[in-house]
Length: 382
Image 1 (tube, helix red, strand yellow):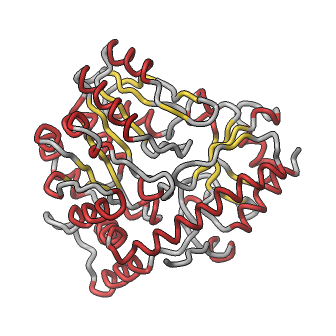
Image 2: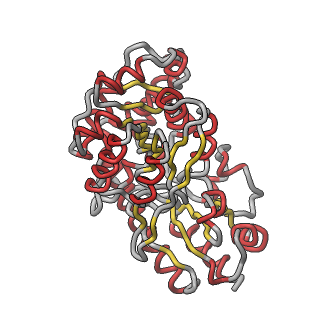
């Protein structure tokens, strides 16, 4: 297994991506979902070779990406998706919108489960549909799907469910039983499920990850997954995702999408994704998961010691922490004060829905020194 450590703050400030250009140099940026680690070596080699030979044209009509992902899914999730039922696109958001446009009609309602990734609200609207909010249930120890609320929304006419699994921002990985129950419910009411599984490679080994399309015949008949290497391998700027189906009806839907939906995929993104999903990158990913496990636990210790009134549940997957700061009395959007006075940039909790009032989302995909300094800066405000 490869040891994966973050770059130094000095090196990171040489980057020109959103995370390192949105705020002045005195701000520690822990907001947007970019990580601070070097690329997996196999990805670096693939991109260096492409530059060396000028392999910078359009993506080909037939690429190794579906087979690469199928191999990855088999090794990591114990799932054998059919490469012939997949199609590339530029990113997960584009895949979601294009699928929603074909499984809903203008004005149809699409269920989302807040607090949830803020673009979900915009993606539903872009597809011509209307957001139907069915918040997650907080049991006190976990976040779960509200099946009664989802059933009521489907009975009232909702035509699709936009699922986030693993869930952003809570880091929840939905169980196989929950996914199967959701699929049965959707199938019963003639609704589709579009599952954003972009954080799936980052599920911790102790939890594991169950793909929606692996759980049942009902899920395969009405479900779509949109996947990418971009979050686990920090490739968002290279633009590549994959729409995955598992039945004739759903495969027909993605096959009828305009060719431009596929051709907008970045050539570098495709080459990098193939390298990321290859067995040669498995050790690096295993090392990353160890680092993220250490960081999610370090964050718990830091908060318990420096900010004991903060409430944080260690996530099952990913590098995003959903932290309740309500008891600090810093208002509905504590990120504003934290940015202004502590010079730490966190994602605004209310952006994830009304359920995010008093919360912040913190990206712990960084070095322990940066994470520690960020919490110490915030704690100094108390």
